[in-house]
Length: 178
Image (cartoon, rainbow, N blue to C red; front, side, top):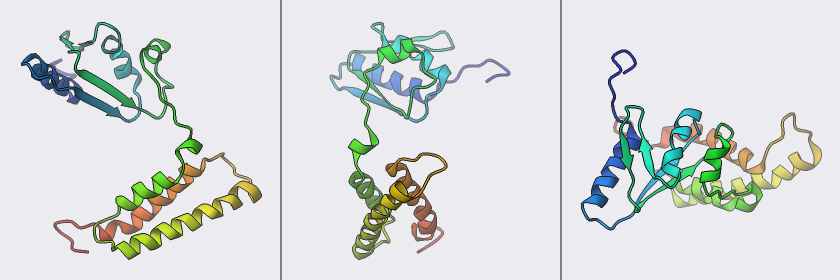
């Protein structure tokens, strides 16, 4: 609390406490914490002590949580533009070129995330139309000049987000039956 300066745990420190308690009570299980989202300069720098050989989380309250060898962390981020070289050097990096990823996995993931009210034949038609759309991307690449450079996978994901807006009415909820 900024007014009273009273400390309360966040999601990461709470999950780390549970994992440490579980491992110290004799459990041999590995615990994986996955951080997915944009990197914030403040919290990523506070992770430096977790990422180095000390493996200790130093909270702003002054408390230190020592991690056990069974705790693993994964940071799935878009970029590390606000991370310092010290933080980057402590992390193992796996970079996927958008071209190497391909489009089929994006299509498969989107089709599987469609509302349950979509019938298999509707999903099949959507898959076919999406693949036709991909063929049209060659027009963008060969004959048109873009104001801002884009990646094919970003254009495809934008299409999916637009379509998802139209499909909102088909998502089952307690108050609405599609």
